Length: 410
Image (cartoon, rainbow, N blue to C red; front, side, top):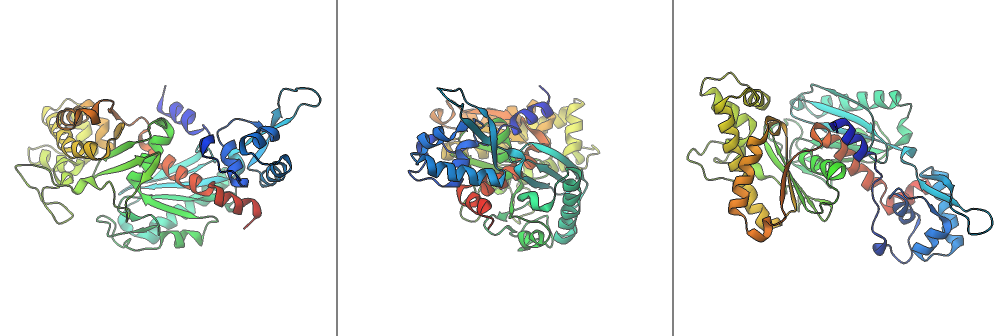
């Protein structure tokens, strides 16, 4: 199956609601929607049986959801005598989400429905160092263009999701001392975009949204997942119990600045030396290959060299994998994930990077922690960030509390 086909199939599946055993005794309208988001049409009687609510109460709340457009009639159930009852199902097209994945030198922007399916998208070379106003104005201008292309308006927006290539305090949506983002530190990204779009604006680190997108589109059965992005820098997104784990201040997963044993303790842009990023990132490998006489400028040039069969490039990638494995081996013992996904531009070079990671993890981690551990390459590729940014907004905007506000018009 092609990547586009895989993404279409996976991303178009409705987001799952909570398991039935977790439904409170007296769920509100939002919880009824959570039940229906699993994609299965249900009758009023079925919803009453699941929730324990009176049929009249369920009817009232179903009518509220119908009026909001979040659910719609889905045909008739089999009759047990008399008129067949109507079933109701989630309507993903009821609202749309604007999702942006902003990298160091690129920007991807997409419009999705409430099931995470891409409706239309665009991308461009945008330098994050141009500053927040220039970059976010690009997002706003092109976001409006995508809405127009899809025949939607800003009133149809559930919200906006943004991924940034640096540390982010998720609760405020502000970047915190980002090393490659001059002018972004403390900038009020949500406030700036909320002046231009309806709905909440959620912001997170780019690796966190990639982890969320990879999990949603391909690995929903993995409740404990680590997504490692190996590109110009190195970062990790952590999924625990099916949710992004961000830590106290949003700094969880910053594995690129963990020191690794190395003969040459190279200086790192963070101010320390011997960091993983300083020896195993795409920029570090490119710099080492330049010293050997190769004309390379960054991670993608390293990938091209490796694909052409360059032995020095392949050796460098294998060693980078081992260095990354050193850090991940400790993380495996600490966090006990069931799945590690390796993504980012360097992962495009083939199996050499992945082989180095596997070699060290299986050697250094505890047998119990690695017994069922899978270490794989990204299945979603460059669209993981877009899908993750959309899912971040969908899960927030369709939470039971937010749904109550949506149907009431607040």
